[in-house]
Image 1 (cartoon, rainbow, N blue to C red):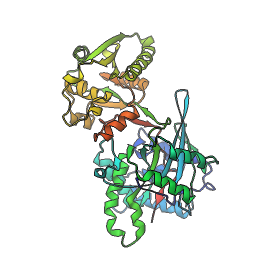
Image 2 (image 1 turned 120 degrees about the vertical axis):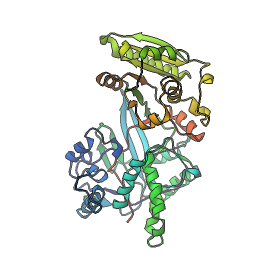
Image 3 (image 1 turned 90 degrees about the vertical axis):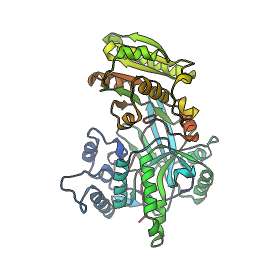
Image 4 (image 1 turned 45 degrees about the vertical axis):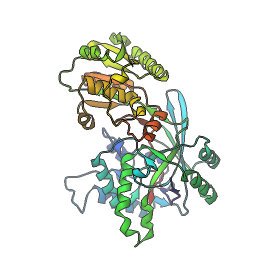
Length: 443
């Protein structure tokens, strides 16, 4: 992976005293009124640039994308945003909690070269949808601002780059901001050309895996092809063959992956007792009836039991059946994998994923939910926390919930390196990378 330093744009700290008020999550997190909350938080919140509101009066000349461009130019003219005079690489650390444990995820922001997946330098791990890509491409064309980070994983068992980052971050950060989830975001800038060149040397021979931001990466790839004819007119266009990325060590203890649970609804002919009976052909099924008072205590016990099963090498998950007032702890039988009708093009690492077992054995074989239904999300909703999954299932009278273990980072790597994509909604890398700490604009 070829990486470059860049002249970052950052908020002017003389005008914005509290960066908490102006940073924001990526655009794909703007759900349930989050955009309005961010708009109201501060008139210079980054959400106003990356997700300007549509209006019924929008025209090709005046729309959400042109308004974002106008707004960006106004903020630059007002010196709300300033560009660093020297190119740099930007260490970006995040402090966050998982339960009672405080964790720190260490990365660095730089421009990463955009290449076709066929070159095997950048490896995806999930499919993308066309509508979000067209939206982000329209914004990039209008503003020329590269604001959204792609979360890239690189392997570095000896932690060479993290050792460099530790030294470079021993001084106070340039910026420190608390996001809406109360996670702390720290940004530094490395200007020493010798240090930058060393990071470039280490990264030069590496492949990277997209952990989060597939749409953003593919938009950058589309745009890099569009601007090729313009490079001879102005060499600065060549920088748009690179994309703003945050590089994080795959082996880092600071990486956290949350599970993504499946909530089943609107499936015709669904019968909970039939599901349990048919599952027993492939799974060891332990049933746990509950009364209302002890439901969440049983849930916590089963989630921990399922994790232990995964650590012992089994494919296991928890099933919630509200109509029967019971949970089930399920574990794939040793002989069952050989009896499943696996997609012929899938590798062994793919077939060993919990989410793949669920998709093939239960959603597909037993419940008859096909690839198109999965893609269209016809019968499934998704949520990351097991308590939320149960509460949502009860609130919306869903038919059942499948509560999964997190997909281990090693499994993600193995599947991707085998040339496969993970099933849809397999990983939730936590926390999200924030926008508004630094971004790139080359013209």
